[in-house]
Image (tube, rainbow, N blue to C red; front, side, top):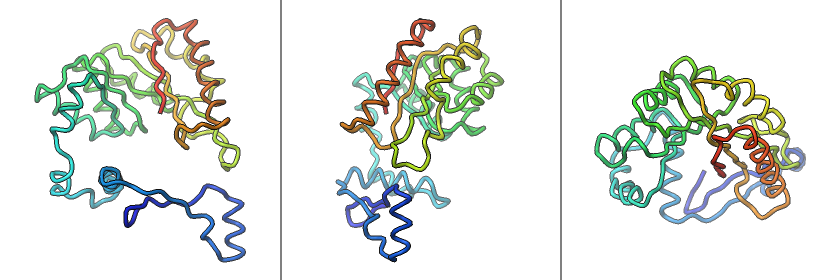
Length: 239
């Protein structure tokens, strides 16, 4: 959440919560950072889209100029989606002649039925560089049923969280030691899927810490091992 130009959150430390409950003093659990106008605008949109009220149209018109997106797309950038609604934006950009069907479109996020259907629409309509990133092993089966054309895919790595976290492995992605077996079983001989990308995401963000570099090193090692048996693999997406 944010208020008066500051984003606030509670620290992820169960033992600290227990101690705070004993003393009835939760101030030590609070953390935060300052935000500029652009960050506050994006935060308001992101939080608003998670509510039933959504975001007011007049707010979007005042703060989200289409010219900004159009200018960015002139500089050879590609696009990422995280929900079913985002696919409508992709289609609108194409219908307006702003992008073509060669643009890379990385589809991250949990794949609910409508999102799966919309991704399939892109693939089946010839957006040849659409890359849905697999968040769990079951998602590939969902795509199998709706794709009529061969599709590039990515795999999200389930990174191990910092030792202070009470959950050890991310709930999203496939574990390091399961990725190669999953590729061999589900993708290597598939006539419908082609593995092009590994997606590496750390909840804490990119930091110069032993934990971050250790996780990145494991990711690169998996990439190199997988590349030996998967010549189509050519991208490492770091988030």
